[in-house]
Image 1 (cartoon, rainbow, N blue to C red):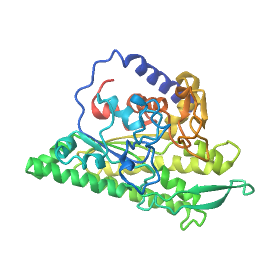
Image 2 (spheres, rainbow, N blue to C red):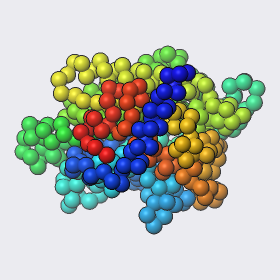
Image 3 (cartoon, one colour):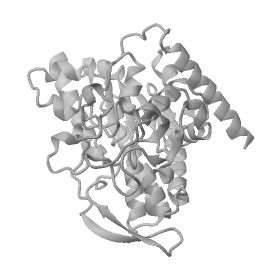
Image 4 (cartoon, rainbow, N blue to C red):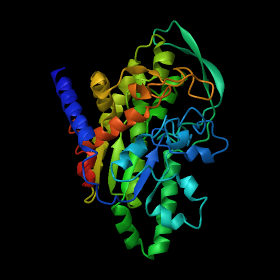
Length: 386
């Protein structure tokens, strides 16, 4: 307990200092190319380009705090975590979705040198995550007494495997421009690879009561598949990785409503998120030891979120359990009610953080130390001062 308190004080001081100094700090050097992979925490509109996709956010009240109150496909009231991270690198917002860039062929090759966002809401590490059939099912709560009906919609999303295939397309186009694989390797070695994924895989496992594999088997499959994807990115030229692990998904408004029904956090979901962090950190440490030129930073998103919520008043948060827009069993849409004090909420909707919460996470990624950031934070990884 004493350790947790110490870490909380450290993060509070670090993030508060960053907030105070950010306006006075000199601009960081021009950022390298940024390529972003993951799920809805980083999606800036990928799913807008998939007509059959149900996991979309290109409608009100999403984007109410974005410039011109425009719903862009971000699962947020404004900027999301991808935006907040790259803003600390000197960019205004995330690079555009890859699927947006391919619709502008005359500028495609020029634009991909600055980066691209492949993240797709609803996607996962596993190939089939996000593709369930739409049905009403009855799920037992953890006390095995109460039940609730949950609509699980069919989604056509872009899994991590396919996102990496899109990145391979970018590599091929860069090689066409440079004329050599060596020149492409040099360009991509300086790029920043940002990844946040895994929550949807866990939610689908928890919601699937047929359980085709044990929890231990599922965890092993998840991390081995993730390892494969990281190695594939490395083989394609990626060298600098910023990894966000899974946050406290058991404390989302959805989990509080569906898994427990009494507004408490789901311990099985929490345990999965914690285990995933340790698995990812161990995997990256092992893999990086076998290669010479890989750098990485792993953000313990579970711990950093727990610290922020544990000292929530210091960060201006007053509600860390409820959704600002919608509630735990249905998401944010044009007919949902939404809060006016959005900067005081941790959650925008049943799953996703508010613009303010995303900003706090980004500042923590750049300013915190071990055990929240391992083996270094994003500032140290990228050589920037903020």
